[in-house]
Amino acid sequence: MNTIDTFEDVVVLPDERGQRIYDRLVGLDDYKERLVKEVLLLLDPAQLHSWNKEHHQGKLAAVEMFTSRPPLFVLAGDVGTGKTALARSFGNEVAKRSKVRIELRALSLSSRGSGAVGEMTKLITGAFKQVRDSVAQTRGEGGKAGRGIILLIDEADALAQSREAAQMHHEDRAGVNALIRGIDELAAAHLPVAVIMCTNRLNALDPAVRRRAAVVFEFHRPNKEQRLAVLKDALVGSGLTVGDLEELAAATGRTNDRLYGFTYSDLSQRLIPSLVLDAFPSKPITSAGMRRVIGAIEPTPPFEDQSHATRTVDVHQ
Image (cartoon, rainbow, N blue to C red):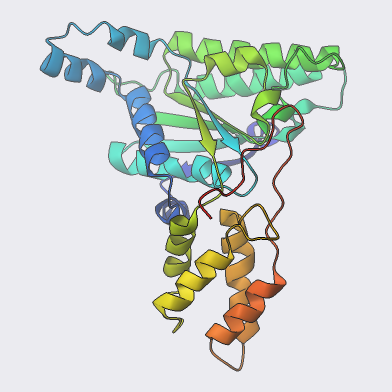
């Protein structure tokens, strides 16, 4: 088994494009800073002990509880709300602050295999072994790691579906067991590896996986202020006024006919490019064109998790 088979891609960070994506994520500052801090401490746990010594005379027992947690972080929420963008980009900030090489390894959904007995378990076990082997001997004398890995499992419910589901195949159950075992082994070895799971269906994850998560971040559609921030950033130089942008931010929220607003990806991948193409190649972007475009685009409907009532209604408009 090789790296290409196991991972969709392996990206060495920092990466300029990834840093730009990270910088443009708005409304997620708390999540961004928490993830960065968590991985910085995985890379150099001595920082936490130094903090304990400086501020608590080294007596804070919570430090040991902190360092014994599984390095698992779950990013859950509706489609297009920034989960995967954050998961793929925050490692740039980690690499910049730590001056350490960070690898983003995205686990391939082909890890589910073809259904042959034992194949899924073998693929997942192999992926975690590759990750462990890559960083096992990288810590220096001071305890700081010379390399860190972010293991991304997107659409995590495809690999970590609850074993309580009556229709679950034995091979899938064995795969979830292998996934849990891999996470536990990372925790036991105190390796500089963060496992990031992204899912639209939080309640579909196996309870044992959810219990191991150091934190679960729930993502929601942007409110008006967040939509306005995205629009202002993208449309600098367009000639649209502040009033135009306020109007556009309002129009992309909840309306009388629609109980949900635009997602981040609706704004960045559909609306804003449509504004550009509506004007290109013979005219500038105008408020009239803006109104025409917004009238022709509908946001992505909320993802309906049958096990959990959707919480993506844009209550902030």
